[in-house]
Image (cartoon, rainbow, N blue to C red; front, side):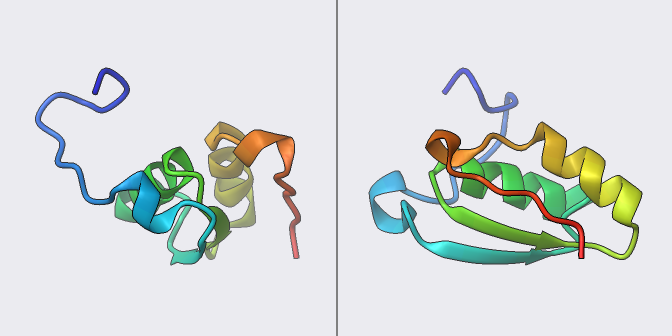
Length: 75
Protein backbone atom coordinates (compact mmCIF):
# COMPACT_ATOMS: atom_id res chain seq x y z
CA UNK A 1 0.00 0.00 0.00
CA UNK A 2 1.15 3.50 -0.76
CA UNK A 3 0.58 4.82 2.77
CA UNK A 4 3.05 2.36 4.36
CA UNK A 5 6.81 2.87 4.29
CA UNK A 6 8.69 0.68 1.82
CA UNK A 7 9.53 -2.70 3.29
CA UNK A 8 7.00 -2.46 6.11
CA UNK A 9 4.97 -5.53 6.99
CA UNK A 10 1.21 -5.79 7.10
CA UNK A 11 0.29 -6.82 10.64
CA UNK A 12 -3.48 -6.56 10.68
CA UNK A 13 -6.45 -7.09 8.41
CA UNK A 14 -8.96 -4.25 8.63
CA UNK A 15 -11.94 -6.58 8.73
CA UNK A 16 -10.48 -8.34 11.79
CA UNK A 17 -9.88 -5.30 14.00
CA UNK A 18 -11.96 -2.38 12.71
CA UNK A 19 -13.87 -0.82 15.60
CA UNK A 20 -11.93 -2.68 18.29
CA UNK A 21 -10.48 -0.76 21.24
CA UNK A 22 -6.70 -0.84 21.62
CA UNK A 23 -4.57 0.41 24.50
CA UNK A 24 -1.06 1.36 23.38
CA UNK A 25 1.56 2.12 26.02
CA UNK A 26 4.60 4.12 25.03
CA UNK A 27 2.51 5.60 22.23
CA UNK A 28 4.35 8.90 21.89
CA UNK A 29 7.32 7.59 19.91
CA UNK A 30 9.11 4.60 18.48
CA UNK A 31 7.35 1.26 18.24
CA UNK A 32 4.37 2.41 20.30
CA UNK A 33 3.68 5.31 17.96
CA UNK A 34 4.15 3.10 14.89
CA UNK A 35 1.68 0.59 16.34
CA UNK A 36 -0.82 3.35 17.15
CA UNK A 37 -0.59 4.68 13.59
CA UNK A 38 -1.17 1.21 12.14
CA UNK A 39 -4.13 0.56 14.44
CA UNK A 40 -5.64 3.96 13.61
CA UNK A 41 -5.24 3.22 9.93
CA UNK A 42 -7.37 0.12 10.49
CA UNK A 43 -10.14 2.14 12.21
CA UNK A 44 -9.43 0.98 15.75
CA UNK A 45 -10.48 3.09 18.68
CA UNK A 46 -7.26 4.04 20.47
CA UNK A 47 -6.17 4.84 23.96
CA UNK A 48 -2.52 5.84 23.96
CA UNK A 49 -0.41 6.66 26.96
CA UNK A 50 3.15 7.76 27.61
CA UNK A 51 5.21 9.29 30.38
CA UNK A 52 5.80 12.62 28.65
CA UNK A 53 2.54 14.51 28.22
CA UNK A 54 3.95 16.97 25.69
CA UNK A 55 5.32 14.21 23.46
CA UNK A 56 2.03 12.37 23.77
CA UNK A 57 0.10 15.47 22.70
CA UNK A 58 2.31 15.83 19.61
CA UNK A 59 1.85 12.15 18.76
CA UNK A 60 -1.93 12.37 19.20
CA UNK A 61 -2.05 15.38 16.88
CA UNK A 62 -0.42 13.27 14.17
CA UNK A 63 -2.84 10.35 14.49
CA UNK A 64 -5.93 10.34 12.29
CA UNK A 65 -9.27 10.58 14.02
CA UNK A 66 -11.62 7.74 13.16
CA UNK A 67 -14.35 9.28 11.05
CA UNK A 68 -14.37 12.46 13.13
CA UNK A 69 -15.27 10.60 16.34
CA UNK A 70 -11.90 10.91 18.05
CA UNK A 71 -11.34 12.66 21.34
CA UNK A 72 -8.03 13.68 22.76
CA UNK A 73 -7.68 14.28 26.45
CA UNK A 74 -4.72 14.89 28.67
CA UNK A 75 -5.20 13.32 32.09
